[in-house]
Length: 336
Image (cartoon, rainbow, N blue to C red; front, side):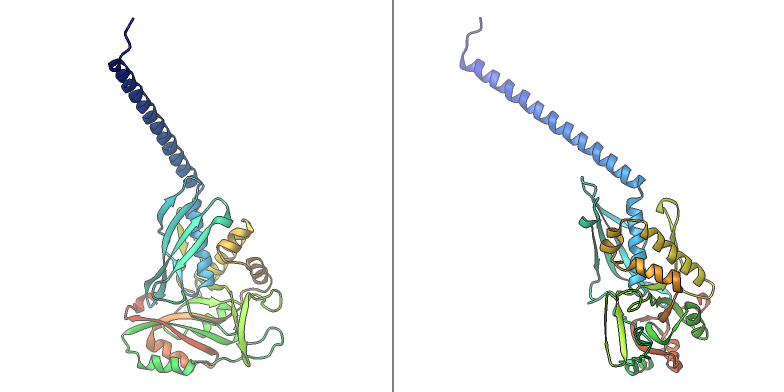
């Protein structure tokens, strides 16, 4: 029989500590492997569901409707995938000034399994707002009274006169009557300009309550409106997307068709997704009005050489003119 002594006790303790350490290491390795397999499986499952591409696509569609002449770049940067399935990704926002896209900010989207825990954050360094453009209604829908807004208009023409010819710019205006998109395109056909966005009237004050408005006297401006831009549609599994950049006589029908199709697809999704996360709180009412009454525009955002923008001064059918970004010459007449 082995005699118990301090040396034997120390050997047993050392052996026990080593055995315990090995067991702890094995547990941590096993947990790490389980976690790694889980995260790989989660990543594959989310990729199979086209989740990031889908949310990128629809968030960019919503921004294109609600922010004049602003759109997202389809290429995204994946920032994080949490163990609970929350995805965080980011993409740039650009606007067209002349014939070049200018980066003006970015979108960070955190998409959780539940929409109430999801977030869409827009940053625009150096800018108070992503867009400062507003559009005045040509008449009060409640009374039919004609409205006029010329605030700051003479200052815009003066600034355009002083800008050198070697520059391009972005201009927004409202019209003095409601027009179809086709009529708006016809109005501008003699000017070397690209039409990028048109504000749409969708039954505010009549068929649905506007999200907000301002005005007094002879002007009325709506908040929370949507607009028609060059159409956007996705391929199978959102692996690709096609986008129309400008509104022309050749692209207007496709752009309208694509907008209605995207509206229909969104309305089939959970209401909290398009209302709370994407900010399209009146989507159902807007879609119903467009389906029943057609597309009704009352202005446009255009871009082109500043001297071409200045020529719009001769049009008596525009009002509430606003000058946006100005850049050095990048205009290619062959692309017009």
